[in-house]
Length: 66
Image 1 (tube, helix red, strand yellow):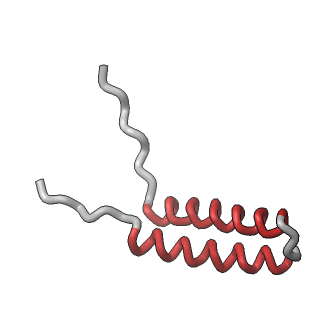
Image 2: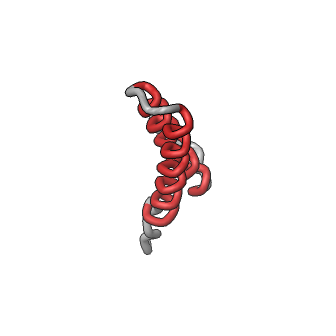
């Protein structure tokens, strides 16, 4: 039995999903440990942006020659 392949997503969408996840993780985590909401949001936004750039630049596999 041959299982279908998962759908192909653009690399920008994947980068945004990682950035959104980690940005929310830092924001909620910062608020949970007692930092102010504004500080947690700003740090989460900066971390999300940096994760987006990192995954966008280094996250894609190099195409292989057949």
